[in-house]
Image (cartoon, rainbow, N blue to C red; front, side, top):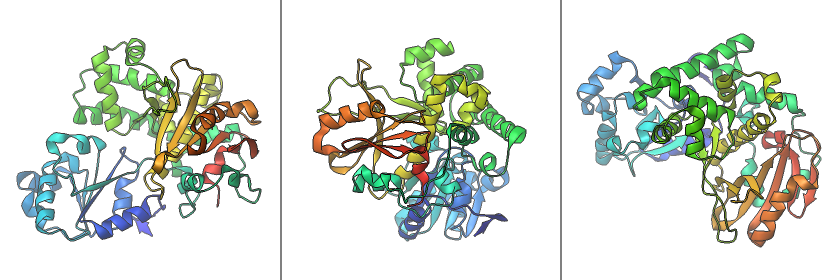
Length: 421
């Protein structure tokens, strides 16, 4: 299929999105700017309205009901947050006529979270679309989801030598992480052009989008916060720590972090809680949603990352989180992602996957090519406390070995996340 004269690259959410458009009157796609939301939505659209173009927005701003009623279905309202009044018009239209496939909306996540402009509860179903992930780039969107396989089987199923994964080493994974997943730099740009695109993206987010979405008084402070979040991606820290590092007061930090979340740049992975495990921290783990942006914010190449062990581990973990977050939206088992850390700092699990019925799996990310038993010790600790509720644990590493590390704990290459299966 060609969209806008270019061949369409299938996304993981395509099948779910197709089903929702066929069954519901209004569906929206949210996520960071330039992640491919409009391209994905246009596959269904009979008519497209670009509300970020003033000439097209004028009529909808003056009287949203009349032009909305005249659209050919399915109608795509692109960047709808530029004219938030269209939500009310869609609500009224859907209340009168609930036929499926009438409206598709794309826009910023912030607008969906703004209670003042949100009449769509129960009428508009949203899906998250982030940057491209490796399964999409490798053309393996039809394969079973890693998180579904983990839920359905003993993790030893991943040890099958017949599974076909990419053969990658640490430098290869870093190259993938530094490239990121935004379609332009991931698919067609390299070298200086890719760096320039990512730098420009960050500049527009900070200078234009942030001002449009939130009350930003100090762009320099917002940039310092973004740089800190990039440096500490996959970290857990207090607002006071961030405030001191960025030189901004605590209330401003809270507002600016919320703004980065709303723009789809920052993901706060919640802390997992259980009555079977005591003294767990409640602070979220901070991930930049695209590792290419993290590297761009710090102006670092692969050599610079390799000089900083903390940043190396954080980028690899955030890269894995990117891959898994894309699956959460569409996985049959409807998993939720958390992290775990106890207050003493003795035990932590990078990603806790919680399924229905309280079943839990754990994922650790290690920058090692030769995983050994101690690499799975935190997963074994969690297993021993959860008993039968613990499905399994996976240590994802930068080597090529698939090895057992104990009862229900295995070590796998990171590339097994998008391996053919």
